[in-house]
Length: 416
Length: 215
Image (cartoon, rainbow over all chains, first blue to last red; front, side):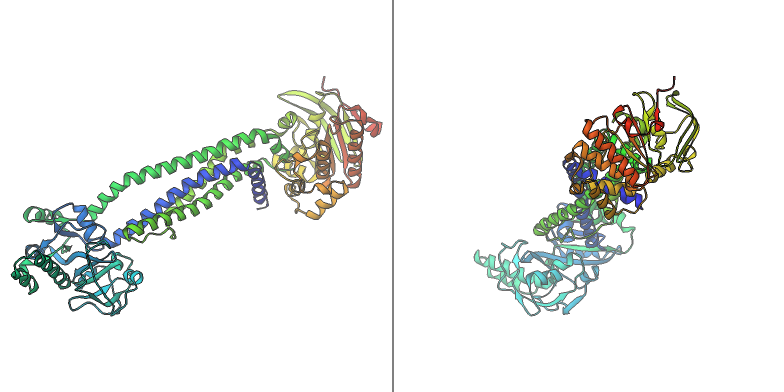
């Protein structure tokens, strides 16, 4: 123990003797470590988040268009929907025996960028969501809101608010059909926290009027307004999508193909689309990771070169250590300790930078996509990066240490 | 006897540089190894410091058979029992004067003792250099610190390699006087290896060993 503290205090003195070289090595290595950690933090959380959001959804049936867009809009609620599908046509498909559960979703409006979703109570079951206060929506224009919506909009039970058309804040307001908050959901850590949930009827009601008003302004026939205002026949009603759970895993083999081939709708599997999404992002992420790894290797090379350079200058110094009673192993240890100390300093700085960077990226993403990502979490993979950085630093010191180990003291002294 | 050497043959690369049938140094018998460069005095000094092992021969220092010790045992022995002062190489450049001395204690396996270090530096008149780094010291000051370090762990023997050859007459005299004083003070036996004949008068003539190298 005594030998180790002595070796480290010597290593510290040696590193301090060359502050600029030491600083350069530490910064280079910590930038590599920080970059990789920031990427790991964001990706792990995003993947985690998406996995939870996909939950038990095997398949989404919606309007034709980009399957990725369909999934992004109806499962993750980050993109605009591909369009609507007639309930009547969907009914024939979701009543097939392969389907265990089909949850309808009607999208289109938002409140302060939080989406208003017309759906059924079973949508909550998908995420094990519970009502924290108040109750479930029952009548049209009653809404239960997600935990985060409640927190950020400060809406309370009994409050009224008007949805805006579209998904941005600039949408035209449906001021004549205000919703009333009747319940607030407990946090689930999923997309549900950021949703305003209401009945399908509410959506139809709001939009029927909107359509009607628009048509009335165009001096259309009054009967159109009458038709939409009265209870629509079932076959005219539209939803945005159905979230499907299979009755049997075997359904995955043929069911989507059947839907795509035999109807005007499209079926998209969330698992497949998210995998595709990650393979698209993956190229960029891999590039960044490789870049960061190269940075770490350069840093290790810098440590190696630095130690080799000082070795020549310090040969006499190291011989003097032997004169004072240090063993070969001890001399060796002071050099390995320099690599270790550089690595440790870089890792501490790098982990710090990585988490700050992660938080910064997370906030940028949260601002635009309302996906809460943060740098203030710890991911197991970080230990791997830390281990790799430490191993590289120590490895870089091994050869110089061996060179110092080999030196014969009398020969060095005779040259000094 | 402090040092007892018999049948010594030493050198390097298979070449014998010095050979002795018998060499003995009693405790308190301050000894001068005098000879021109290449005469083997440094080789002998390295053997006395347990830095090098002889090709043949038995060496006993302070009743320890040094030639039978392992390398790391010799390192520990040297750290605890022997103080070395060299011609130019005095201090670890990255450490302050005080840390240099504290390091010598730690490497010898002695509990680092700041008080003890301060006392010695004060006694040698370099107390104001506690926190100074070696490059800020003059050669003479650095040597004083090196002498302070050599006696710090109360060694049985102080070995000095050419302690005066780089110094002018006045400083050479001061350096050798300090070595003698410190050796006496700490009850250590001083062994000086040099080609500098100026300091010959300091030693009893029977304690001057003239080396000519192995013929």
